[in-house]
Length: 307
Ligand SMILES: Cc1cc2nc3c(=O)[nH]c(=O)nc-3n(C[C@H](O)[C@H](O)[C@H](O)COP(=O)(O)OP(=O)(O)OC[C@H]3O[C@@H](n4cnc5c(N)ncnc54)[C@H](O)[C@@H]3O)c2cc1C
Image 1 (cartoon, rainbow, N blue to C red):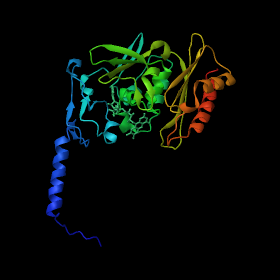
Image 2: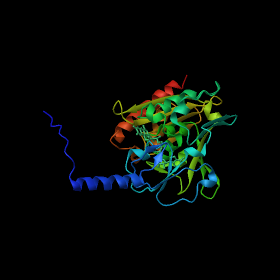
Image 3: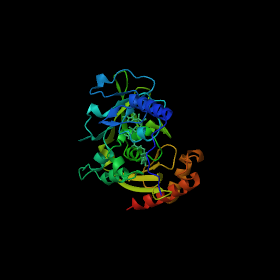
Image 4: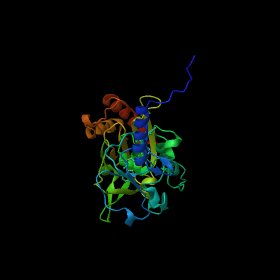
């Protein structure tokens, strides 16, 4: 039988417990009324305007949806700067293309209806659903957070690379610069941002959105992260073919052909452009298997887009 008699804590345990609670409570600040357990965080800034972003300090981090920041200890951080209050419009459609705010949630992007001429539309949904994550993450995680994380399995990176995405970056000096997504993600958890720079938006040009697309993705286990995520696209104007290889490689790559290649030409280019050390290795898949799956998917994509 379980002994249900309540035993009061010893005086020492009681004092230690109170001390612990006080330390955590003093550091545990609130975001939308909920406490955080990142106990090195002493401040959360909530700017409403660019002019309120203030000076960047060591120990600062931008806060997107927090799905990664709050998922593991961040002992090097002392302040979070919440981007949500800046009120950037999540999605803007125009003649030149689609602008996705860095703070746009995955669920918002997934719900977007695009003009019928933008034949790449299904690719957006395919990439939104390529997370190892449930709707709970989709509703919190941001597109910018996914891109800045620069994980090989970041599906917003795959999407942006396939559709010629450009990153709009705000510098701490008040300027703006643009970087192609292929230059923005430089390796696993490495990006091209300098300290204090923030990703403001991702621009997808209209021409890329009118390409036909084909998508393939695999994980080692049913609920695993993507181990290979490949996207093929073809231009309606000249039939040019592009292959985007992500998740299987340490950084994203886009391989361009003026016309549809033969199976042999495609396989040769993949091996020529992706050096052995670029095939990614982690518990989600061995490099040789990732290369094997990428070659298979590439050929399936080539065939699908040959029609
Ligand atoms: C269950 C689960 C499953 C997941 N599955 C995947 C997956 O399949 N693939 C994957 O890639 N990730 C995955 N993640 C990791 C993470 O949730 C996603 O990468 C997510 O998109 C991060 O977005 P966020 O807005 O929550 O980022 P945050 O946690 O807010 O931030 C992530 C990083 O980006 C920085 N950052 C955020 N926004 C900006 C900005 N605008 N400018 C500059 N820096 C910024 C932050 O400072 C931080 O360093 C998963 C996480 C969980 C908990």
